[in-house]
Image 1: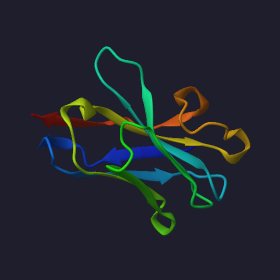
Image 2 (image 1 turned 135 degrees about the vertical axis):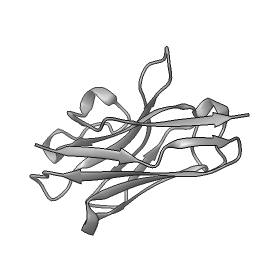
Image 3 (image 1 turned 120 degrees about the horizontal axis):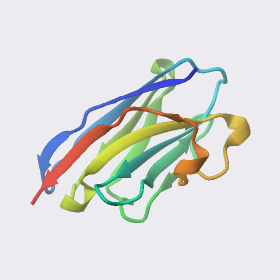
Image 4 (image 1 turned 120 degrees about the vertical axis):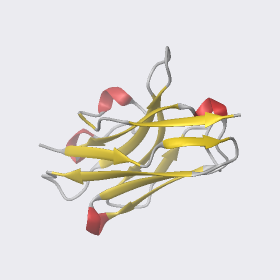
Length: 126
């Protein structure tokens, strides 16, 4: 069973930065599709960034391109999301998710991911 634990959330002012981490355990396969998602109150969960851990391909939502960077440390089974130039509209609960390689289709779709962390809150004030 894959277990994901996020950390690094917090409260920052607009223009600030945060780095989220997602520590994974219980992997069965060598590589997974991994994604960062967020959900603001009253809104649907949306894909923010994604990566195939076996390569360098990444995905970013248009709203975060140029500001957020997804990366990984395979030796530590840890996924990161560096968030710069944060805006109040980035305020949300942020989740990481994992998708086994046989199921990887669209890293932007929450419905494709069977494994989820508990989330970490990011609050950006103006």
